Image (cartoon, rainbow, N blue to C red; front, side):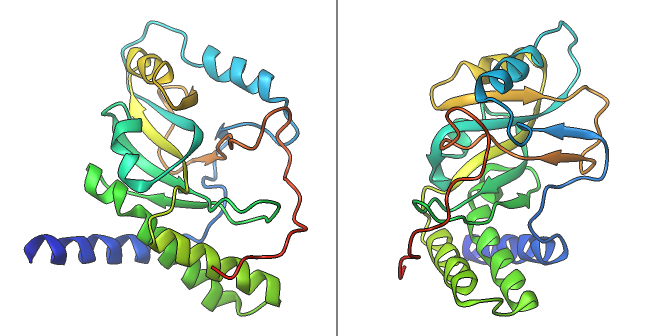
Length: 216
């Protein structure tokens, strides 16, 4: 029972964070993690790999992008045991654009796994704040909320903190498409984040948004 109460408290805490920090590219500084718009994927992969070069032993914030979206329970296995600072979720629907949701998390695997529920609360808060912009928007948000609450394979990336050797080891692990590190002096909350999605195969551009939104 205590574990259940703690889980609810954690989700509530992260939901409040989400309501105060609606989905967007996070950060107000000049640092950025992730590919630029219209950047060739091959160029970004080289840039990400180069960011891990060096011999310093300081801690770095880094973006981990997956080969395919994963279920929340798989987050710990895709973190390399490193401190997770942020979890990125996006519900994949073929030919339908869905929002990227970034959830900041305190230390611990349990809260990272619970971040999918927090992401759903964050989208619900956004929907309530904006109102029904149009029918398609409402349907997209409703389906995304439902799938996140159901534990869908919708986690597309992590922001972690580790040394360059640790990050290089993580980059070589199965299921990891790219790891990009910031300089060691980058400050948490002061850099933008945009993961490399599995659907980006040649150039980083938005996909089509012309398919009907499913019922659930």
